[in-house]
Length: 474
Image (cartoon, rainbow, N blue to C red; front, side, top):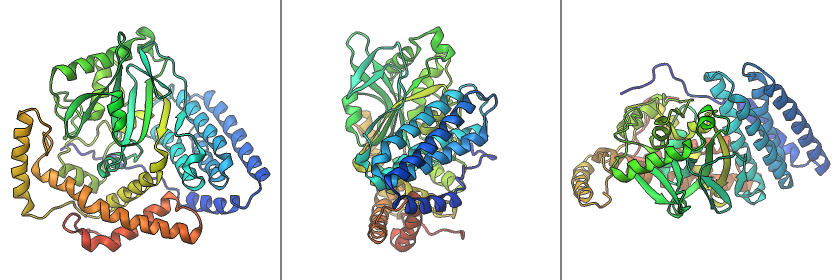
């Protein structure tokens, strides 16, 4: 089992900042429209000056980047308090993301740069989410256009978005396991799944190539891809000045075409071990990575680890063996790609925030020694079901327990999905509703995590044996 010895999880050490933001929100709520406009104008002017300095700098300017990350949050406070200001907040967040990611193409990549990009890109998203939680998700469009990235590859229109062959599709599902994938790494983030778009140059039809836990590598129509429950979708595209793309403008199409041909020609099982160097099995990120790597483009330049001891134990019990790997969301911070458009399920914003907060609290418990479990006598039945699943797979049916997943792993996954998540999300929802009734506004995310800890403590006795008690104190 390859566990990174020296890796450490990113810690957003922002307790003082969060306290300041709460105080600013209270102040902004009583401010006049003129005061809000003046505050946003000052933020915009400061941001533009910092972006100019970044564009002209040589080495990565870490101090200005840190200030830009804080500016996004401070601007979001104004949008949270005044819904009419949300379009300006969105425009500022998008402008910062585009300016910083363009500049980052020439920076040497190290841990400091990785953290700076994370605070800008992911930080901008959570700034918007927190503002939307207060102002209302309807105050911004569900579809946000980030950057018009040109491409020579075949394309099709999908609900007003031009998708090109070779585009990378990041998404976040609505299942508890999706939250675990998104949050369970050294840079907790948004997305839990990666897929590759292919557009047939003759028919113009679109196909999505992906790897699913329950089926392995598959293809689906665009309509089928969109029909499955998703909280978010982000479209990424190779940046137009990439040397490989300048040499071959059709490279993304050829990458998607080669992977599509392979998936159609052979069965590629899901890679539960996450051993990304071995292409004989593939989890979702490997589909994209190996497609491009086969043509000389090594994506996931910034690879984070899964180093927290509790997380390693949980994932190890689910079959993971490689803990420095291709985390789906990490490709978003790769300077080789650009973000084109992001879609948000506006009606599911609260569900998304609750799932994240619960998962963060559960991972804290994992670090304290809490483990996923099941009743000992359930294993015999699960093994029988696993045998039946092998028969299902042999006759071409989708197995009840996925290929490559053991009976014990299936029970642990079920413990999370059925035994732990439902009662905790109900308990957290009740606490969040009480907070809103008492304070007159939604709980900010850092408060949701605290409420999730409370819910977990209150429900702990009822969660056994799905979740054991911690073996270490905080």
